[in-house]
Image (cartoon, rainbow, N blue to C red):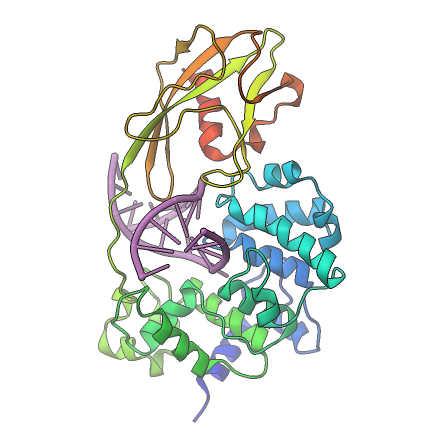
Length: 344
DNA sequence: CAAACGTGGTC
DNA sequence: TGACCAAGTTT
């Protein structure tokens, strides 16, 4: 009886998705492996993020910092600015920590084993397995959202996530081959991203359809089950937009930890049900008619915008000359505040 | 272990 | 409009 993994690899040989950080299966068969730096960068960017969103950022980072030594030597603010808009900013902070640790502790060479990678900042179970298998062909067990879904359907597992994760991981481990490990990891994820998709899976085209338990039971589309989430609350705040009389903008680098940590933005109040006003300058304020709205993972935010022009020294933040102000270096929530200024 | 942590696309 | 979803990690 043919191996499930072999069926998947045969499918991947024909249907592998094209990505700039990848080496196609035909080339991998001749012994060519991808640049581990490019693979690691892609995997961190791909955490909870679509391939479509990652492509441009990956190209930008590889252009600005072609090697891990270049990235390790970069300024924090430049890296955070380049990451702006991609989200989950702790990833960018940990990306730098990881690059510097590899340069300082590993001579600039990527660790090749799952366990060694796991000890680095921003590298958890998924990323350690992905990098060790894709960049070094180690037989690590890669379990991401795609693999969870494929395993849940293949074995018709109805227990809800995240409680069922250990069971799905064990099923994935039983299927992981000892050879072509990198291709296999990418094959399962490609299958989950295309054929075995969350909604309307195209089972008729699936290389595993004849041995899929959920396909037989007619339950594929409703798996994996997930425990229901709470509905997202709305929080409120004030964003302060201060211009100096020479046109300079008052901006503030947010604290390392917490929401939008380490990112540049306009000074704001805290974000809560009833925020305390916290203007960064003692001056007269004008309130805009339009409210900037933005949704984060776990709450909606409605920001009232107050503006002023003053040369009074602020109590927090720093002025950035108009010529040096780049709105694309702001996270999306702050870009919406900026965009509101000209449309209000 | 549950919660925090972004964003853009889709239904 | 709103809820769900995407190659998770950290605390």
